[in-house]
Length: 556
Image 1 (cartoon, rainbow, N blue to C red):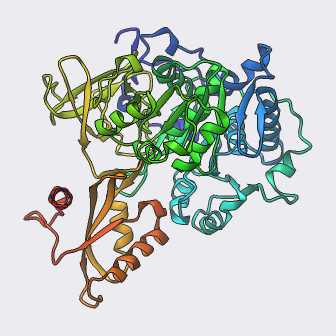
Image 2 (cartoon, rainbow, N blue to C red):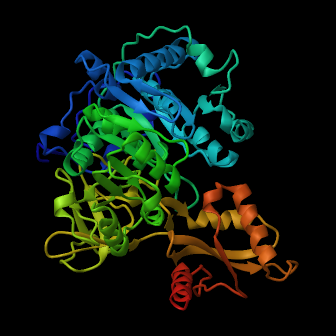
């Protein structure tokens, strides 16, 4: 094995100092890891590393503590002030809540200054963050609690109802601490008298610090395990090479921190001493309004949001922007062209994923080829292969394979071998690579639906629909949609006792799904069929449903 390419078997890690060895014990076997590439100096980190020291503490040590660090609608903090808040929270975690290094901590909140501080505090104290999307329902919250053996949850009091509903579904959950609601047991009350001093936990660069759960193509999410060094690598890769971030930048975006794309809003600016703008509500109007108010320079959101902002450009001042990053769903050339014509800015496309933590295919503004996703970042490799894993020549559609300084490591999950093969990560996307090395997105290779930047697993929506007594069978696929790119569409076969198809029945089923799983996953279109297309062995032919959905769109 070459010195700069480390296989799972060849990598020598600094010993973990974690008191709780759960994460390390549940990493996949080393022979199932992808190859990790460290050909570039910026991806080589010291063996002992706590990423929060690099993101936060260094700026105070270098005399930059009075620089503005984080902006919210209600408050703003300098690097010095944020460090003090983080340190007080660290002392609460260790001294009052009994956190041991390596313990997992569930976080539930929309993006906010407090959420940012709590996130960093768990990492600095040597804990492992498990952040969840704010819209999840109780049983969706219970899954990571049980899978990651989580005993402690920290939660915004506004999300208490679903958090409490999840409590009886997760027997290992010992304590929930809320913030924002006041009271003697609130997180703010517990931290009020704590010291603003705390020495970062002595962690290895290869200690797990984040378990990010995917949406899951089977309805059962996968926990992706990331190291302290990975948190720096995404900043030293995409942010440095493509965004070309600097200390005068102000970052803003729409994705929650629980969605790893959203970490760009928190980590990218802190890596270079810039400013993070956090919004609890980040719809297109909220985002556009905040860009003007806070003079944001770098925006991260999905194509759906950019399209929505285009219709309202006259109402907002976006003149401070210098970079606009699009990810979460495919960026069409029409959206690229319209944004460029309206703002003079080229949308920077990119594709990443929870398994790889952030973007690995993109192109800097001066290298963009409209319609193409881009090329592998420096320090990454990518190729297009056939079903047998053989390299395809240029201009042929096949499966994307990628590797770099970060790779997939699932938490105790047999699906590791489906994602990683022969040292390469297989994200589940179909691409074409042209003669100049640009990668062009074609489709997802699995049952994931990407709608308005959200990953939605078709089988999970099917499972929710099937809990309604009126539904005998169903199939869920993505359908083309001008506004959202793709929407969730359900094809439903009704049971013998169900009422006749009607708009009222459609709404009833939609509301049922919203009550069963996160509301954004509900089918925005439902079509009733007498029978679903199936193979001779009785398996659902989702490709036939996709063709029907595409045909319905083209017939409009």
